[in-house]
Length: 239
Image (cartoon, rainbow, N blue to C red; front, side):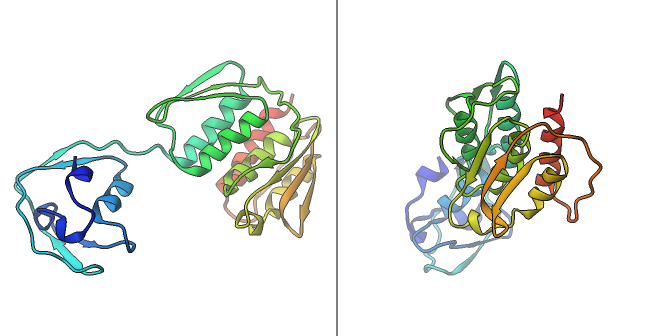
């Protein structure tokens, strides 16, 4: 494979000066080589053939990559993070078993999976992004501890919409970075629908006192896909 076939230093990269027309290839971070950069960008492996050795490049330098005779291989793009979040939430809330493929490998969607497990969903993790989720049929299990969202603002903001309609109190926490992000934007519409949210100076931890919700007409002050998803989840919870 491309990743396995090149070394860990720039002067061990073979043939990249002929690989792709007019690409500027720069070292991304000290200690990382080009294979890691391309692997992270494309989420797969590339096999290159008909390459010849090129001159060594010093760390941090820029190289111009020109056409090769041929490029062969395959790419498997990673799953979309935003879609993975929402599918995990919907599957955990739904009745029955859902099978998801090519689930994002990012940390944030996996925070959502762990969150759903704490609420009673059954999650099985397979290979190559395969996820099986047994849903809670609209009724979550009351958590016995704070629900950890990690570094995922999407998890905290969107799942607040599902928790606001549950007949129990729940507390959402996150890491230091997430605890600095604004959460007032989720309290305003949920309060208008009948829920009560306690924030810490406008930030996490977020304590949600859930209960029956009522519908409303609401215009978000700023465009926010997370706020829209939260409102949609609230609508699903209304009888």
